[in-house]
Amino acid sequence: MDGPLVKLFMGNYAIFGYSTIFFFFAPYLEFHGFPSELTGWVISAFYASSILVKPLASSILENFGVRRTMMLAGSLGFGSGLALLVSPLSFLPLFILRLVMGLCFGIFLVAIMAYQNIAVPDSRRGASFVLTTIGSVCPMFTLMPVCDLLISSGNHGIYLLLPAIMGGLCTYLAYSLKKVSPLRGSDDEAWGSYKDLFLKAPIFALTVSILVFAFADASIIYISSLSFAKGLTPSYFMVAFAAGSIFIRIAGRNYFNRMPRILLVAPSIISMSAGLLIATAVNNNLFLTGAGFIYGLGVGYGYPAHLAMAGDLLPISLRPKGTSFILFFMDLSWFLLPLYMGYVSAMTDILWAYRSLALVSIFMAVIIHAMWVRFQRQVMSDGR
Image (tube, rainbow, N blue to C red; front, top):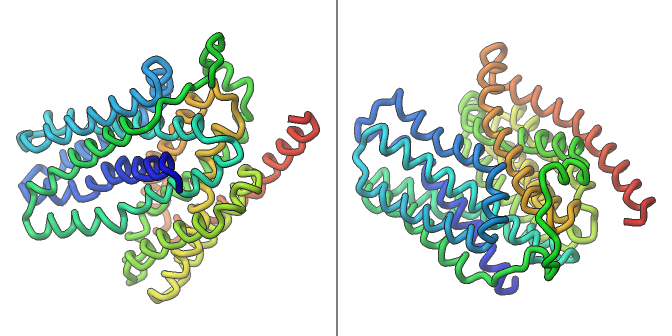
């Protein structure tokens, strides 16, 4: 990777690391006697504000500049991380801090994806997303074990310092990136509106594609419940999932550039669904590992494929809003998936919740593929 891609890789690592650290925040609060009925509100505040800010994030970076928006979000992440160190263990200050942290996460994520969609040439965009988004997986190997060790050993002060470190790293990386001209010298061209986005993008196909992919992606939240229900160890699936995701992004990065990204969506969803179906059927950790690897192959291509669509399908003036649009619906799926799992599991069980999700996803993948093939043929016939 060249210099800018290394920084974008580290930016993905830093912002997803900022989020990953808080996977252990609930145990931290419980250890200090924080009321369990309020813990959920404190945890969910981060994700709620992250979802809500996505549609507005594009307007923020259009007005302040992509790089400066990244610096602003990183600085707020650094400041709120420091505030967490001195915050009392009471509901209101923690809830407000978590809201601010979610805003930082949502804005920085939109900005860094928009920066890459603008700065990287069309011929290299696909492979660049494949490589830089490996950074979003790496905190699972690095920060999660560190956080687990710090919480279990009682080093809570060091644990609370980690969000500030990640926020500071985000700020530094944003500062170190070169300023990009979003419209590449076209001073008389204005940023596009959401109306322009809806007129120029294949909105229906894009929305369905994002929702189906992200629903299967978000199902990882309940893998531990599925594994425990079968008497298996969830870490086998999780490690294999991360390994499969990284493997396909490295081994297949050149193919990812040559193949139209929209035609990779359906195979990715089918691979993820196959991994989930296998996970519901296996009875030992070895086969669970294989299921996780197959699932990871699908995520490894599907996630960067959708992120690259803002650049593949839209003119530069609409890419910030396109990025916000894509990330908003991805986050929405992560919000809706627990509701689906809760209701379906209550009516049947966790196994059939996963099986029904996987089977519906395979069916929808066929429809999605037909939509994208039709769109691709139309683009080719129009000579675009």
